[in-house]
Every structure is written in structure tokens, then in C-alpha cells.
Image: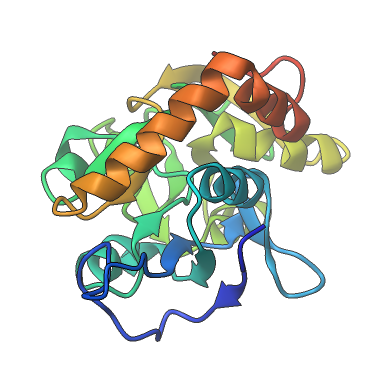
Length: 244
């Protein structure tokens, strides 16, 4: 690996993909670090998860020096635009609204379902109080569904809201919810119908970083073709997950 380390979100911004001397600068990979198994902070205090493993491999194949930057979800796009890091790998779905502000690579995770989880069966999700993480496609969907939306800054808080009775259900990526339901011992359960949202998950970049986007697109294409991306998807999300 090429010097891949955990950094803070306070790194000083530098413009452009290459320095004036023509040498490639360190590419800072922004992530939330709070959305397992996509990304999380492990016991050693380092960014871990599917996107860490994938991002490291993308940087190695693209011959880039990369480091990881942790940033809260609600400011993750503004801090990309302002230059605090160069990419976003944070379980971010590709949407038209986001694409107006930043650019995306092709998807590295196919479009998958969002789902409802509750502590009791028989809840009408169209009339319930539903928790979702702020600034997500799930929050946007609930806001238009007729249900009462309660937003939280982190995914952990959305699930906690169901456990403590602040919300009737949580609506999030099904892949995030599956291990939580399995580990709950029957306390949590899936309810209602699954909903397909977004255009898959991609890497976010500034619209001006076309060369960097092309580099990452090329290696994502390579990993899809040689099967290594599917292997990673199954490793982190199980054999039944959607693959390419």
C-alpha cells in the first residue's frame, strides 16, 4: 500500500490534482466512519470496512498515494467542495440532486433496497414516526411519504430512537440494517415493503477533478471485470448481496 493513513478533517486544502512540480499530491479520501459495514472506526482507531478495503485497492491500482479523512455526514459534501479532502467514499448514493453540486464516478455498489425496521410488527409506515439520518435519500423519501420524519445526525442515533421509543421505525439501507436485526435477538424486525432508491453508490469528487475521476473510473471498471469487486461485496455484505 502507498502510505494510506487516517487523518483529520482539518487538513489544509490544496487545489488541483498535481503540484506545480508535476508530482501527484496525496489524495485524501473522505468518509464518515460511522456506517458499518460500509465504513467504521475499528478498535485501533482506524477507518475500516468495505469502503476502506476498496479505496485502498483503488489507490494501489491507480498508483496514487492516499490517506483517509473522517468527517461528519451532514457536512461531508461541503467539506469536499471546500477542499478539505478530494473524494467521498461514505456509502453515498448517486442522485441527481447531489450530482448538481459534485461529480461521481461510476457506481462501485449496485443500487440496493432501503428498508424499515421496528421494535414491533403491524406498524403502518405511511402514518408512523420514522427515523432517518439527516441529508440522506431515505430522509428525503420519508419526508414525502406522509409519515412523520425525525432526523438524526448519525445512523446509530436513528436505530437508538426506535429502541427508546422516540420513533416507531427506522428507514435506512437494508445492508446496514441486516446485521443489527440479526444481532438484536428479536428486539428489532423488518416491517413493510423494501424501497429501491438512488442510482447505486459511487465516489464523490469535485466537478473540476476530471483527471482524478477518470483514474478511479478506470480501476473500478478493472475491478468489476476481473471479479475482485464482487469478491469484496460478498466478503462484507454476504453471498446474497447484489453484485456486478
